[in-house]
Length: 310
Image (cartoon, rainbow, N blue to C red; front, side, top):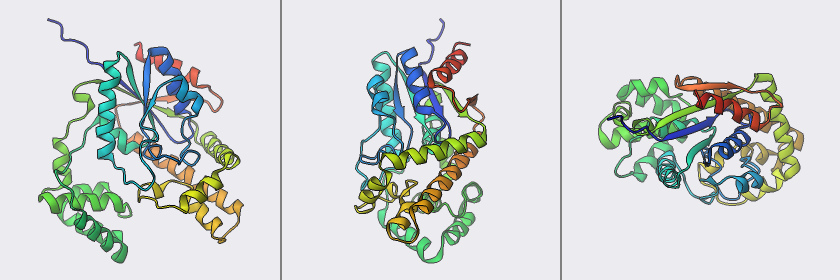
């Protein structure tokens, strides 16, 4: 007997401002699909401009999921996201449609495609103690500790990446096993589905110009008002990492002018795009799709559709 073909899941990833949302929506219309956001910041309600959420026009045209699901004071992590995303996959396939993931959070993509492992319990006291040590002695101190117990993970995690260093140490201290060993036991989407990942790639200088133009539009839409409201409220550690918050805090506190605040948002957005591309280039299963600065989402979707039809 011929085994049944695996159901297909599509990822459209890439750096910020490259055009993922428009391309995903256009493709979804062509193949009867629904979109699942793969963005660690778009999960937060009320963080609309600062996270560049897909427009209401796109969300009305095609069903979108995992946008606006928690308040900014709530901690949200990759484990919670994976649980929610896998549930959405089953629901969408159950409706006879194709799930399309669209976003640029590489860690979320990796957790879905390659899988993660979950501790049965989380030791909040241990985590707080580790973060306190990082604050008092620096993340390099914790990284040196990690290097002794899990040199494989330490080699992959930057000494300044406090969140991942703490996580790796927390896992070792809770289980007695290195996270690098436990990660080999995980299962991902590739075990049960046909997964296709497409990364949109634009010439670097053109992408940077597009990022700067987007930031300018964000200011025109009311970024300052949104940032002031958010900074005046309680934010979770994850939500407070959104690019634009710390950059505009300095302006709102009078440390520098609006132009400097905008310059910092643009600079840090460009740096984030560079980190995203670095992350995705490590994945050998990704298919790269060259796009032009003025290329419409429908044209990009056509390119992807041609590759899916091979």
